[in-house]
Structure formats: structure tokens, C-alpha cells
Image (cartoon, rainbow, N blue to C red; front, side, top):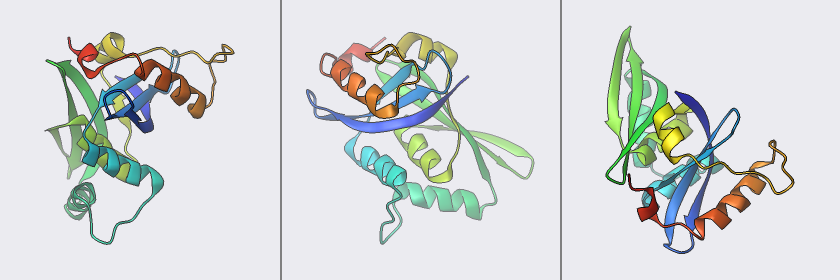
Length: 165
């Protein structure tokens, strides 16, 4: 399992499709792009920006349910890509019991962003779909905005269909 950080949510200009970017915490700091729906992109962006809505959004409701049931969201795992669809799991614990719940990655990430939960990507998935980006000056410790800028250039030449197995 590879620990990642939620780098950004952007819109691919060619397809007008939102994409979430997950970046490895350690070298080689590959980025996993996952194309997602507009409502989920908004939910993730709201969580990243700390936006509080007048009424709870679905992912806020899920967070409240987890908390009110005295459960803990231990981690989110992006597990695989099958037939152009990504899969994820919510790993929960409650009273000594562990549960794994299947989820869309966008929903899992939106909940994780609200609960400060670690996100992981399976080794096999990152190996197959991760994209290595290098800053123009070769600095491996480039700031996120430089990485996002380079990734935008990459997105100009890629289509969602390119991520099919």
C-alpha cells in the first residue's frame, strides 16, 4: 500500500471532466489521476477549502453517521482499475470490529478529506497507472502548484479512455 496525499481537484479542459490528483508521499512521488463526476469534485473541493454549507452534504452526513456510531474511518484505499472504473474501500473500526466497505474513489476521498483520514493506493494500481512528473528544473521537491501545472500539460494530451486496462 502506498500512502498518498490529495494534491488537487482540477478540470481537464479537453473533456471538461473533473480529475482528482493523488500524489505519493515518498519518492518517486507519482501522481494517480482519477476522473470523477462534477458533484464529487465539488464535494472534495469544498472539503479542501473548508467550505461549510447551510445543510450537510452527503459526505458530511456520512462523516456524522460514522462519528455518531462511535466508529473510526481508519483509512481509504484505492484498490484497482477494472474496465475503466476505479474501485476503493473505506476501512472502518468500531468496538474492536473491523469493516471494509466498497466505495467509489471520489466518495471515499470526499469523506477522507472531511475526516483527515489517510489515503492509500494499492502498489499494483500505482505501478500501472501512476504518472511520474518531474519539475522542469529537476527538483524532486517541487511545490504542489508546479506539479499541478505540469500535470495540466499532461492532461491536455490525455483522454479518460487512455486509462482503460
